[in-house]
Image 1 (tube, rainbow, N blue to C red):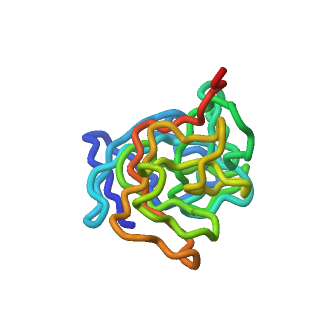
Image 2 (cartoon, one colour):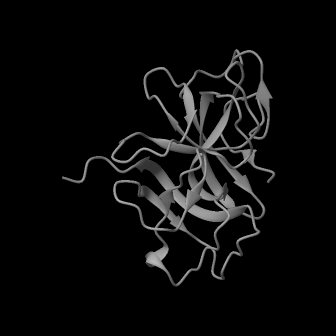
Image 3 (tube, rainbow, N blue to C red):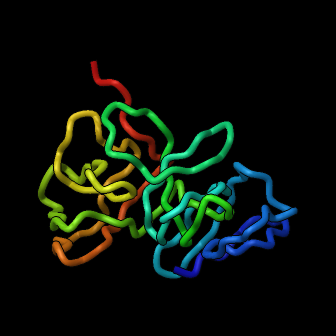
Amino acid sequence: MAFTIMESRVVTQPIAATEATQASDITLGTIVRAVDPTYGMGEFIYLLGVDSTVVGSLVEYNATTYQTALSADTAALARPCAVAMSANTSTKYGWYQIAGLVPTKKTAVKADPAVNAQRIYQSATAGRVMQTSAAGKCILGAARANLTTVTSTTSTVILLINRPCKQGPIT
């Protein structure tokens, strides 16, 4: 992915980079638009990372502190989500995608576009998604965008996201 920031202001940290210190020209929670020749337009939020983040990890973040955590296997946990654009740690800062097409880490189960109306769910593996229906674990604002089946050996699935969040209580 080669996203290029489209904002008129100067932003020094590229979308695919992490930095050990917060960029002086970027406030935590800043949202920018960027474009990629393959995935088109997307929106990104600037957040503090979490250990074990890889490109494509699904994270949840605190909308007050802007700290991320790998999306956990917890039902009915209504929190905003984003997809990591770089490998990251708890002491680094980076961009996370919140809108547009994005390759996202999935479990080792095939993703069939004919199943579950393209819905996506939190898997038992932190930071990964699955297509298997699980009560209270739907990722709202996210849908599979692959037109063909993604095999069980493929590590990512293309999602179309629009400010995704984990499903809150359902009762």
